[in-house]
Amino acid sequence: MGTGWTTPSTVDSAAGQAKLPRRADGILGGRSALNRRKEYTVSVEPEDFKSAFADHPAGVCIITADSGDGPFGLTASSVASVSLDPPSLLFSVTKARGAAGHVLDAPRFAVNMLHAGHSELAVQFAMPGGERFSARQNWTYMDDGVPVLDDAHSVFVCSHYGRLPVGESTVVVGEVEDIVRRPQGIPMVYHQRRFHDLGKLL
Image (cartoon, rainbow, N blue to C red; front, side, top):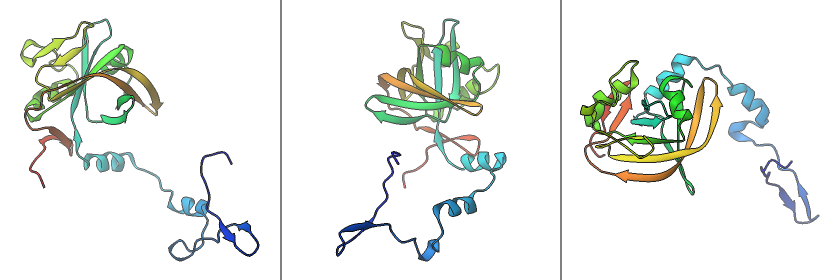
């Protein structure tokens, strides 16, 4: 009760009383939802989980911030839109230290969406000790120090809306304060642990 879930009922027109629905027949075989849930509960192997998501293409971004100790950034393929009101997006980081810790500590951050010409840049921001924020990488800086990639095809400037720790990761929700769009190049995707261009229209 009070969970927000509703259960349909059938009405006996003669008695004018509600009756509980009969158990489902056919493909469910009349089994209860509880029993079905137990039957289909299986253990998940970490490698199977990672391999299944490796089969799923995702866009590639570099998330940047300045927590007061200079610019920091990391490559992410977990970015997704959340809401139009307020305009918001989310991503996850696996460790709350290093660049991820600085993104979490900074009041604002930028999500720089990459195109196919940024494959080397994505690699540098994904590896420990990679080249970051060099002059040849075309970064500019906002008044509060947030780095913005000059030739990203879109940039979302965000403030922190909320976060949720899940296992060893933290899900970050950002409220979008500004968007810069420079549609150019072919978007880059991450698939089977490699970077690809988007490919032809189907």
